[in-house]
Image 1 (spheres, protein in one colour):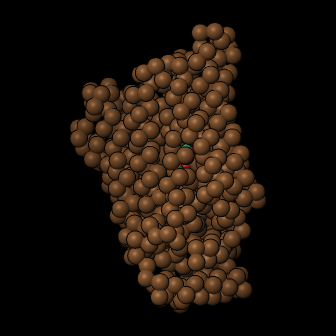
Image 2 (image 1 turned 120 degrees about the vertical axis):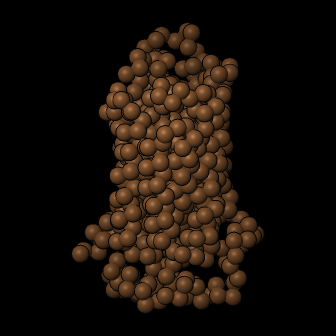
Image 3 (image 1 turned 60 degrees about the horizontal axis):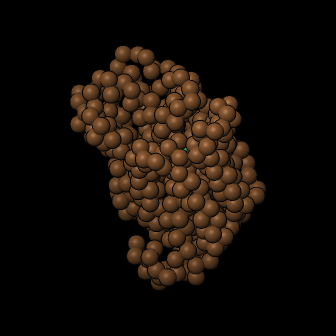
Length: 448
Ligand code: BGC
C-alpha cells in the first residue's frame, strides 16, 4: 500500500475517536426533548444527564495520563473504544435515569481518554510538514460528529423512543474505532522510548521514505539518549523549564472554551428559537454543524502553510468582532429593525463559528499534541485535556444560569466571551510560539 494511503488510513481510524467526541457531546442537544418527555426529568436530573459526559471526560485524562506512556498510544485507544461501546449500549438501553447517567459518564470517560491520546498519536505518526493537517483531522472529526448528531436528531426527532435511536447511532462508530485500532501500528516514537527499536524502525519504514525514516529514527534516538539522565516524572511538567508549554496547555483551552463555543454548540437551538419557529431553529442548528465542518476543512489547508500564530491572531480578532455583533444585537434589541437584528444574530453566530473553526478549534488539540517533551507527552497532553473539560463544564453550567439574568437579556454574556478572546491576543503574542515546519524533536530542543 502507498505510504500516504497508510498515513491517511491511520488518521481516519484515529479520528473516529474525534467523531465519537463530537457525536456524544452534541447529541444531547437534540435528544433532550424526547428524554424530557419519556423519563420526566426534573431540572436537576436534566443537568446531570447533560453534564455527565463532561464530568466523565474530566476523569478520562487521569486514566490516560499514566497509561498512555506506560501501555502505549494504541492500547489505550483500544481500551477507550471498548468503553465507548459499553457506554453507548448502556445509554441506549437505559431502563431509568440513573442508568442513563451511568452510560453518559462512561461515554465521557472514553471521550476524555481519546481527546488526550488521539491528537498525540497522530502527531507522533505524522511527517513534520503534515503534522498540522493530520492532527486537525481530529478536529474535523469532532465537527463531523457534532454535525452527525444534529442530523440524527433531525431524522429521529419525531420517532417513538427517539433518544434511544440517537444513542444507538453512537454505537456504530464505537465499533469502527475498536476494529480500526486493532489494525493500526503503534507510535514509533513511543516504541523507541521503550527501547523497542526494531519495531519502531519497521513502523517508520512503512510510513516514510527510507531517508526520512532513518533521519527520524536517529533524531529521536539521539534525543532520548541525551534525555537519559534527565529523570522524567510527571512533576517535570511543573518545572521551570516547561513553564511555557504548561501555560500553553492551560491558556489555549481557557480561551477556546471561554470564547463561548459550547454555549452555541450545546444551546444553539434555544438561542435560535428566539428568532424562528421550533423546526426552523433545528435547521439553523444543523447549519451551525455544516458551517463548522466546512470551515474546519478550510483551516486544515492553512495550518501548515501560514503557521499556527497567524491563524490564531486571525481567529481571535474575527471571533471578537462576531461576539461583539451578537452582543449588540441583544443590547439594542428594542430599537433594531427585526430584519437587521436577525442578520446580526445569525450572521454573527455563523461567522463566529467560521473564525473559531480555523483557529481556536484545531489549535487547542494541535498545540497540546506537539509542545511537550516525548518522555512526559502522554501525561502532559492528558493534563491539557483535563483543562479543556474543566473549562467546558464551567461554560456548559454557567451559560443557562447567566441567560436567566440580565446578562442574558442585554447580551452581556457575549460581551464577556468577547473580552476573553481579546485577552487571548496577549497570550498569542507572549506565550504561543510558532511550531510550523519544526519536528517534534526541534520543538523539544527549545526547552533545554
Ligand atoms: C472543542 C469542543 C467544541 C468543538 C466545536 C473543539 O475543538 O474542544 O469543545 O465543541 O471544537 O467544533
